[in-house]
Amino acid sequence: MKTNFLTQNNPIMLVVLLLLAISVGVQAGEWLSLEKDELHDPDSTAVKVLQQPASALGILPPDTAGNQVDWVRALREGYINPRSHLHDNVELEVLDTDILLKGTGDQPFVLFPHKAHTEWLDCSNCHEELFKSKAGATDIDMMSILQGEFCGRCHGAVSFPLTECDRCHSVPQVSSPLQGR
Amino acid sequence: MWHTGLRINIVCLFVLLTAIIPGRLSAEYADVILNKYADAAGMNPVLFPHWFHRIRFKCRVCHTELGFEMRAGANKVTMDKITEGEFCGACHDGETAWSTENCDLCHSAKNGIKSGIYGGHETGGPGRW
Image 1 (cartoon, rainbow over the protein chains, first blue to last red):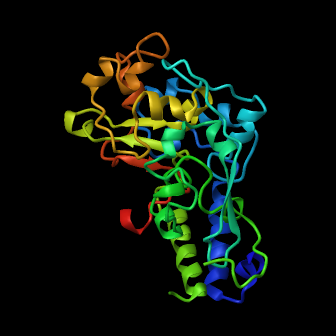
Image 2 (image 1 turned 90 degrees about the vertical axis):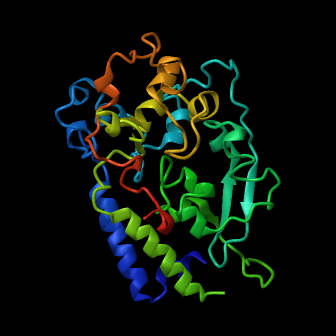
């Protein structure tokens, strides 16, 4: 249960949460200029010519993680209008089906919204390589996700990071000896 | 089966460690370094900013139409292919976006940075440390 997860009297857990809060705090609300991002060569022409992150990301709906941008909202509310195709001349087929994943141990169930994903992605980006189309046919575990498999291919890399547990584990389990794994 | 509390702690520690690994806090989230060939060829590595591109294109454009795999480093992206219109060259042709003559604008990262995806929360996991 979510409450147990956060409040259990466990020193390692508390230290982890504290340090996570600090690390998130350090990163929040600040977009470094290109010449200070530790990746760009500060002598490169690029840092003088290319768009700075703050000028683009600062006007998009805010978030507290990742790029500090709520990308799903930015798209839905028309802040951005990214192209769906270059050559194929197809529009994305938005699938509005939610999948409830119950194999979450004693953590809240995961509710996967197809809609937010198919607004950006093609079915083939996830199926059949990362996930089988048949719900329940793919054995997903958190350790693999943390290593960049399954959801972790994007979450933790380009979409909201794995520090945001509650955004996926969003459906509380009702107590029943038959539920969970 | 591990004790649940221990399992949660291990998961949390992975999340924590990957969140605070030094040197990953500064890059903009999801920046990609492409350095499979650049350094060896005497060029600066390429820095691909996801944030800039996703404002203008949905994921599927590059990850379906242009053939970029959903894993940094999985493609063999060479300048020959790009100038023939593959990968970055599909847009960076002087019409949709600047042409490949502007070497420095893409080859803009510091030498010696390894290929991969960077940014504050990047979660590499134990298999990739």
